[in-house]
Length: 129
View 1 (tube, one colour):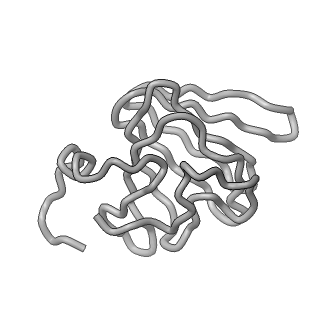
View 2 (cartoon, one colour):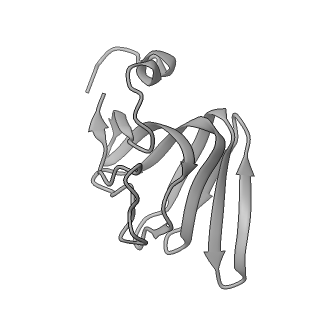
View 3 (cartoon, helix red, strand yellow):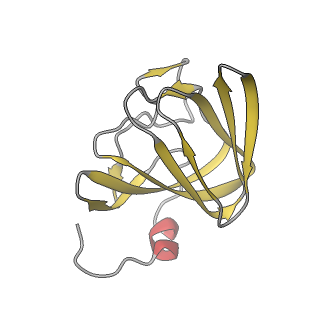
């Protein structure tokens, strides 16, 4: 990890792959990841950890399934949201977005349980910048 400040706009400009998070830095045992997203991710669940989202640019939608059925959370630029552990969710973005995620190092981008992973989604624990 760098001991210099990291410009997120420069970091985001350094890759084009969608749904393929890059690890910007680590805080204790947590990764700070950025990703470019467009279209739909995959329905998935993180059994043992919450998942933090911050929208840096664009709009992110997160479909959620819980005991009350299915609902949609819409996050405009600058908004944050935490998906609680054990909640089935599917992020998506109609027009594309850039996001920042905060989660324990080693957490899979497709969770512990998931639907079939489409080719446009990178099942990873994060890539180095």
